[in-house]
Image 1 (spheres, rainbow, N blue to C red):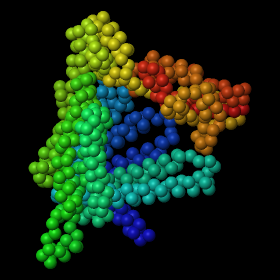
Image 2 (cartoon, rainbow, N blue to C red):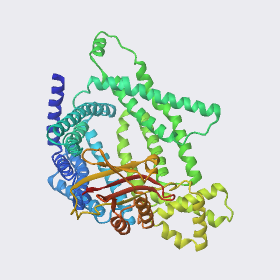
Image 3 (cartoon, rainbow, N blue to C red):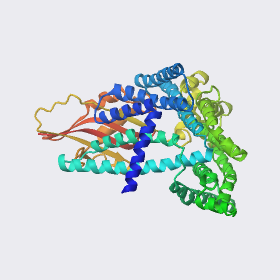
Image 4 (cartoon, rainbow, N blue to C red):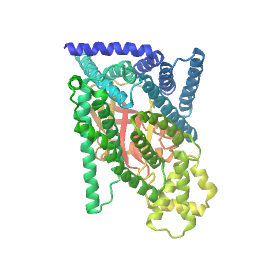
Amino acid sequence: MGNVRSLMDRSSREIRECFRRYPVTILLVAAVTVLEAAILDMKNQPMLERGVLPFLFWLVIGMFFAESYWYQRNIKISRKGILCFFLILVSLRIASGNYFYGKRELQTGFWLTRLEMVYLSLMLLGAVYFCYRRSKDGFAEYVLKVFANMIRIHIVYLALLIGVGLISAIIYTLFIRGYSFSLLERLVILVTGLYYVPSWLFALTETESEAERFAKIVVKGIVFPLALIVYVIIYVYILKILVYQDIPSNQIYLIVTVAFLLGVAAWTMMEAVEGHGGRNELDDEREKQGKHQEPLKMARIAERLPWLFIPLIFLQIYSVGIRIWQFGVTPQRYFGIIWLVVETIYLCLYFRGAEKMQKIVPVCIVISGIIWAMPGVNAYDMSFYSQIHNLELVRAKDDLNTAEKEKVSGAYRYLTEAVGGESYLKENYTTGQLEKMEKIAGENKTGDVAAGETVLIYTEYMNQNLDIRGYSSLQRVTCDLSGAEETEDLMQIKLTENSSGSVIGVVNLENFISQCVEVGIHNLKDEDGEATTEITAFAAEQSRIAIDDNTLFVIDTVSMEVEKNTKQVQAIYIEGYWMTK
């Protein structure tokens, strides 16, 4: 019990110290937390949900960067004011753009997304880099200390979550009839915003004390052996490929990426654990006695682990390269290539010496700017040019083989959904060529790009002025279905009451859902399926469903994930009112 209390007291001191270092960031996080908890059950609050909260969120990210920079260097108050003014302008631009346009206007949404990613990567990576420079530790020691801090933070956070879960259960059991997750959700939001997020900030900056012994045990006993097991499994898989001459799985890229991240954590922290950062009393005693212990076997293995990863890069090159050769570049494959570049740069820095490792953060900042914003070579421009090149097959050949048809199909689908793609097609291809492309795309629905595309058909707040005259009871009900099995039978949909979770009735929604799908896809204005005037008007008109003479189901919110080509419903969420006389 004393250890737990000591841990909680230490966490409390850390939060106070964190507030001293990041006062503006912490206050903004607290404002977002309280506001989010307050409006959790509120509806139709677009100004708060899509305006104020996003603005505060992006400003939090910016102020974290600014205060990390100030904490690392002594900055004049005038320069602080200029930087704050700039961050407020950028945050306001992002938030206002999403509020007024969101994803409804594709061109605006496209540029907003790129601005968001450049801003996010620059602010977060820059802040972490300043925290590292402030610590004056070696790269391995810094990583180990942050890891030790995170272990302690998550232990306390888990204890707090268990506590708020018990508190909410007791309150509902003793004082409130039925059960709802709203209180628990609010408490979780408050604990996360008021403890967990500030603790992350402190974990990155509090590196003055030695990493706890427990963290070193976790590294040596769990993280490092786990990395070794993963590498052994992958090398066994390579042996299988060589023996049976199999084609590597498409998933090998992701698996090797996970192996790289796990390996980086393992060999970096092992360097600190078994190096000068991992000395203990026994090492000091042996040194006094003149006994020089040879490097431990685990340390020697950790030193060689990066060399074992080098052959795995060729698996990644094959995995992403074969897809590019078959179907061209897309943003996802472009990011795959960039990640290979990051891995290569990291290994080069690692082999040059531990003191060079800090350069990986500025390198990542530069690369982030290139892939999101640099004209001509960013992810979207490169993908656009690649798919245009694939589409030239329509001009070059009259008779296309199966592989070429799949390539044209993927390119056509990509360009019809890309910003500026449709206008490019209309300006550079004849009507006959466009019809040929559309025919090929229709025949190759299982092709690469945009195949099986899922769209969201969504509308809400259709019956805010509800007429309840003649009815004696009103209950809020929900149905939440996902997967082919649950969405197959739409004639027997079970509705559950929100507060108790018990089934209150069964309703036939087959006609309503099928008609919503038809109207929604026909009037879809963008790839995310934002509610259109047509679907909102139709759903509102058909939202009153009579169950019998005494019961009426009034639909308030509809959200469906639908496969665009086949119109197959993959997930349904419907909320409304169950009214009885």
